[in-house]
Length: 636
Image (cartoon, rainbow, N blue to C red):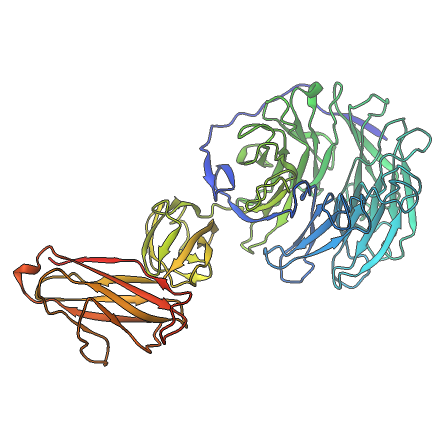
């Protein structure tokens, strides 16, 4: 066994300051694009939704990886029963799994298990470290089928207070039987020493124990973090890292992560922090082959690097175990490195990226959190996301979401375990998935109004509107018409017809993704003018209401002079004009009235007002009816 120390000298990276913008009213974002794709929230305050997140593979076979999210304090049968939520990588659908008893903390850990049962579908693991199956807080883990969502098997902790299932991992075939095996930690297990910790390697095919690894010192808490990585020792079996609180000498809070052979569960080497109280190994992740030597590399987080002064993340060669690069933002108490991930190629340049979380960063509020995206070849900072909510701890968990939009570029995910629900405003926890490329960013409409009329012209303001070959605007599910990309920051379009009282999202999308404003448009029937009201000319009024409703009546207010104006509608013939006329029995969702304006000098600069009443009953009842906007036509 060899022991390596992380570099003791800081080597701060330098980058140019970048703009900060409000992105989709959710998060601030710096850098070369990237926007929020989806966001999911917990149900109740204190759920800690996002305390654990995992890409579990393509469970629903739709071509994209699916995401598993833990909420260990969710209320089910009582306080902290816990839940785990499985979502499609495309943002649709979803199902949840619940703990059995109060205070189980089901969902405190989640992971993809690989194909445990050999049916070709990826399976997944959920930990409940405070389950009392073998004594108080002995812990329990559950392994579910990705094909049927049925429980394949469960495994119990051995002793009280060991918190079996506090961390879990999967996706390696240790015994070569063709079934993926899993790793489960019990960091407070009392072996030879109190709280020395234990990690079990469990057969995926039958749930039997294949091997156990125990901590070497009191309070080692072996298994604080587990990560399965590529095959680093050349035996064709994936290997794994196990982190502990103390280093090889037993020095407390320094932190150590050790690499173990997936085939033998024997330690290959260990890496330790430099100085004291580093928490080195608080997070570990495989990154793929960054240096093109044919062997996968890995990243290690040290959120208290150099005695809590600032956090750091280190990237190591999987072939030589030498440091390839190190990153820190140089800010105190940010907790940078509390979470790390390899993210695939996010920006489309052919080079994988690295994702690093700093959940205590206070750029946008105390402990709001921050996430950094780095180019793995140069260490260059290419993007950051900044948490919105004070004490939200955004970046406490980060991960690779896979290519959710099938554009050939990876997306990333990040959790704010105490983030606020955008409806309830409580600290339920949030998890977001972000685009790799620069999607359109939507900031606001052309005014602060929340109410708009059908077919009204609306201006949208944002960024990156002209990057895609085509740009579409949706109000809810309805496509806007007459979309004109004026420039990279401005779109003019005409609103579709919506349902009365319906409050919907507004979305701008192109090939790079979409930007969204949440719940800003409320529909009302509309009337608009086509043409100009010249004396001696004609113009048309176009009325629109929700499909299935009718235009019940039309109000027209003429000027206080005697003027003949002839309204028309298709082949219904000329109708006598009065200041108020009914449209009895007309079952029209929309129609146009052509108005002829006499060439009379007395009409110049006079104003005509038009309005429509629409509703579901064309025979006189105005229950649930809605008035349209008032249209002003000034004769020229």
